[in-house]
Amino acid sequence: MSSRLSPALSPAHSVLQGVFGYEQFRGPQQDIVEHVIAGGDALVLMPTGGGKSLCYQVPAIVRQQQGRGVTIVVSPLIALMHDQVGALHEAGVSAAFLNSTLSFDEAQEVELRLQTGDITLLYAAPERLNTPRFLGLLDSLYEGGHLSLFAIDEAHCVSQWGHDFRPEYRALTVLHQRYAGVPRIALTATADALTRADIVERLQLEGAQHFVSSFDRPNIRYTIVEKKDATTQLLRFIEREHAGEAGVVYCQSRKRVEELAATLSNAGITALPYHAGLDTKVRQRHQDRFLREEGIVMVATIAFGMGIDKPDVRFVAHVDMPKNIEGYYQETGRAGRDGLNADAWMAYGLQDVVNQRRMIDESPAGEEFKQVMRGKLDALLALAEATDCRRVRLLGYFGEQSTPCGNCDNCLNPPAVWDATDAARKLLSTIYRVNQASGISFGTGHIMDVLRGKKTEKVAQFGHEKVSTFGIGADLTEPQLRGVLRQLIATGAVGLQKVMLDSGHSFDTLCLTEGSRAVLKGEVPVQLRESVSSASSKRTRRST
Ligand code: ADP
Ligand code: ZN
Image (cartoon, rainbow, N blue to C red):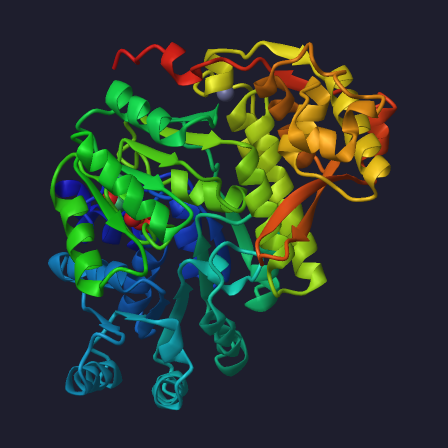
């Protein structure tokens, strides 16, 4: 093609066309590439599938042509390294990787090629970078002026606030100090404001230009349903909307993964389990099948997904709630990389709130860390409880303004809301009265019974039919009351207190908090979605 020979083409453009076979840069790629070629530092935030790889691959090749030597790409994902190096070879680019899969001899050969200037892009696992041997190699390249660029992929791994902290990433601080003047580009697809600031601080990227793309994935439809029987709801969702299509179902525990994979299989869905407790060979086999075959549903813990580049994942389902919005965004982002319609579906219930709160409370982390994690959880709970556009909230969390999307559950079927302020006050006063009457706190079931005026054995045992709130919630259904309770716990207006039994078991009891007062006084309105018996079944199938 004559355009390839056009003298007007910049070096970056001719690499894009000549090596990668693409006509044009996408979105902010060109600005990023030129900034880095010129020797600037960059922090790139771009959603999955946005085209981050080219942002360092093109500069690596151009800078190599300029005689500046090798680019070191730091990546935590071995599978991704292999894929990328393979693809670069096919494009005729000299690339290699150094990671634990290489034998000593193979690693030595790569090191030799590195020294002779034969490699344009070297992919290395972060733990490599910290070895004296590898640093020695880099030192000699640096002294000879042959260290061109550092690309730090999955840069959120450096932050403990991120959703995938990897201590080895901390060692990357050394790059800036030891190899002053070598430009660095850090890239990530998920980082909220806090994580971003932490990346900048940890990697000493204060001077870096930030390139922030829109995080919107317009082809993903977000739906969050109230959890009743998650398994049945999931089955119905898959059968109605994604029969025979590839998807990922995230669960919190390994046990749940196995059970759910079995249930789906029994229902005639090709489902495979994946979690860190499975044998490496089994995991590899399941992953390969998921990538190669059509219509496989992977039932997995969050151990699955990083670096898996399957374009036609039609849905990502959560039967348990993730820890925070970053995790939710990252996991749901694995759907629809091909740009075609895809679903992000989550079933969310009271127990999710209780579990996540408890996990934070019981973690061995320090109080500051717990506070941050609670804040992040609260943001996700607000998203789950939202009755307005999910996407507006999701993007807002990442600092992006938008207008209602027309492609989430709340936009498509605006939920009927009811004013639950009065019900919330009844619930709070019942917790107060019951706890006060007995001097101990009680669990959800008992509080519900008192509210609804049920004369159970326990009620009789504690004389709770005599408290003034006994039966004041009889006009409300149990699902309604549970919805109110869920929202009160989600917003912190009801606290959970763990009680240990002599048997060694423990259970959560309900108590009032600082946040209760405003609700009791009626200062904070409580708006709840009308409980629809099967929110997902009301949806009409898309006509695409
Ligand atoms: P990310 O790492 O951000 O998830 P990738 O770098 O894997 O994204 O790119 C996603 C897909 O988009 C890849 O298949 C890639 O080849 C393609 N791509 C990236 N940039 C361009 C471009 N400028 N023109 C056409 N295709 C592109
Ligand atoms: Zn919307």
